Image (cartoon, rainbow, N blue to C red; front, side):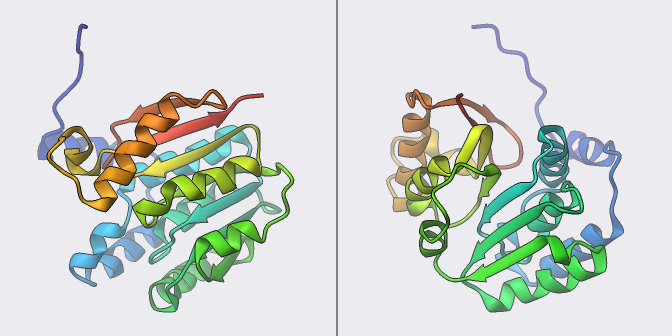
Amino acid sequence: MHEKFTALTPQIYEYLVDHRSDKDPVLDDLARVTRELGGVSVMQIAAEQGAFLTMLVRLLRARSLVEVGTFTGYSALCLAKGLPADGRLLCCDVSDEWTAIGRRFWEKAGVADRIDLRIAPALETLRSLPPDPTIDLAFVDADKPNYAAYYEELLARLRPNGVILFDNVLWSGNVADATKTDPSTVALRELNDALTHDARVEVVMLPIADGLTLARKKS
């Protein structure tokens, strides 16, 4: 197979990030505050990934969103920015500490009224939702061993042609290394394989940040 790609060197990456139209100072401030938390800040999505989420919400004209794993709220802010004024984003997380940071910046960005944050195990929150297929888009970026369970709960509630996005599907390349057998790597590898053969969805994996899979629910 002919392979065509550009190696993402630090120089090329900076060029890529700089050439996006939506440069939001509130997002930049939130990213800075998150970086100041130290090593845990790696849980925040990348800037180009956030811009992609905002654009995808707008392209789909999505009004009903779900996020599993909110951390300090950067991805939630990106998703909410793409919503119309009457759109809603349900955020599932277990940390009051990290999400409190996000709440401040959602207010600054003027989108707090579009976000419903539920502090509880995400599976409990998802299973409490009505069974109707009304979700337009979902973004999953939480504990990897539960990705498959989140998928089933979300897919049942996703409208036809709706999309579920999974973050970290490349897992620093570990999913392609058979010697890596820790629970998170195994869970992601199994999910990636299962999605490829799931007749209910159409799937594409993109090399954005640590890997981003889009699964579109078929009609």
